[in-house]
Image (cartoon, rainbow, N blue to C red; front, side, top):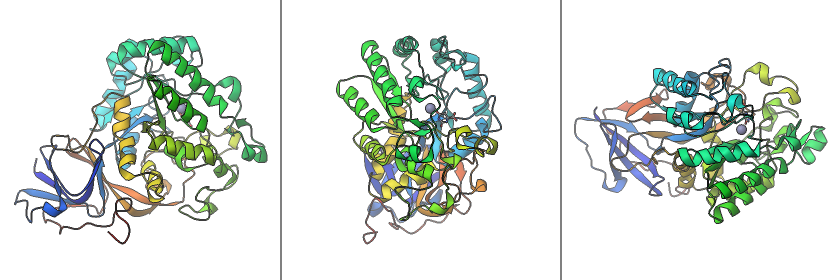
Length: 473
Ligand code: DOR
Ligand code: ZN
């Protein structure tokens, strides 16, 4: 393999918590050197190939611990192959498919099949999550040790909660034995049965059945008690309420083994989107409110979009480390699943290709630092599913993402590789786009027009929002 020099990028190393504008030198699929722009040589010799990353960020490949790939059983919504294509276009080099397929991923052979299909399609890591109960019915524990031996990186009945406390307790005991987390979708069905959106003034105004925060928090509290008692590894999926953030903050302070994830949509959208108001951006950008109407089924998701106070608490939780990871909960559905009455629409948003531009709105509005953000998309999730933390220092694998924070593009069905076109952001202009994704030295995605060359680009600092002020850059 030739030497590849990624030139003039802002290289983010979430492990060392650094952002260095300069050159990343790759050799034989590994990072050889990180060269500060000021000390960059005028020539890297004849053998080198260049990628001009001026004005771009260069980060480790993103890791998504919560993805729905729908194969086997629902290939009309997504396949492992189309999901992997969407992943690399979103900058992801590791994804964890959830087991709510048909058949359910509740046996060793099903887990092995996920690896086989993924290996046939590409080189990014597809690390499946096994079901906690047979058929995700919540009644009989699945063979968790076998699932783990076959390569399951966690256990979950996602889409549904592990409602039986005794089964949850047993699963946590197995998590100690296997080292894999139990990832619960916390939803107390006795509270939220029939609920389609967040309980509150918007639900009342629209006449839709509300899902109160307690419907999520009651189960988080129960699981924390079980984790404290058993010492098992608890992971809370798609945390969405301020009360939930506080429960996890306190549990962590007590030394209980609990981790949590939040989705990009719960960080940037509120329940007012169901009204057709794109709060907090409504009227002041970046989104165009004319694209959305009240009762738009594309705003239905589980857990539901919450209040502005919840969103602020989630951002605070992400910043102070209460929330370890950002996970997409990429939930592709067909048009037929979504184009119906709000009450009947399948919950979920297509997520892999929209996560980064959605999250950059938080960086651009100075709500989170770009290094912190990247850490929650790489380092944080890696620790939960026990894969090596990916950083971009000498000796690390060249598994990385190059994104341009200033690239402007419009979300259209054709712009997404995922079969899932279901997003309330359809028709919106987004800022920020992945230009190139590399997995262990191999380019797995390269956007048209973003090229490699044999000519060395001139040193330049580019324009990097979130790192330098406009006037500095
Ligand atoms: O909105 C959601 N969609 N939440 C889930 O928990 C499951 C997911 C799906 O599988 O469609
Ligand atoms: Zn879920």
